[in-house]
Image (cartoon, rainbow, N blue to C red; front, side, top):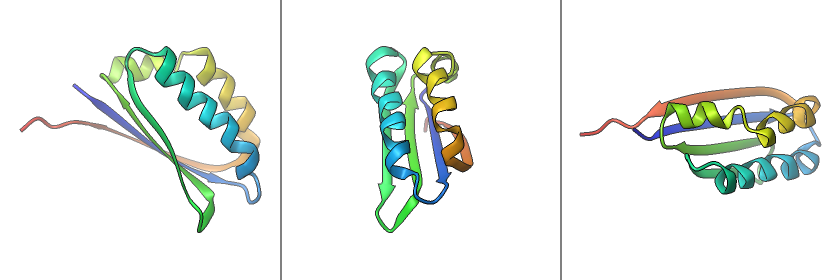
Length: 97
């Protein structure tokens, strides 16, 4: 069953330019290297430069858990940690009608 993940990063002021290459690399590696990752969008709003929104879609919970063990994921965390003021992660499963 499809598994969606949303993440909102609240960045420390002035860090978006340094943050973006790391999170974009993580997104690109996820889609390219993880068979269970179907979509990984990195979104911003120019009027809110300290907020970055991620939308990720996986085949299932197991695919998301596998994502969290991938080298690109594990390497990204320490690189961005000092730029992040807060992080909100939410997960959703699709409801079949």
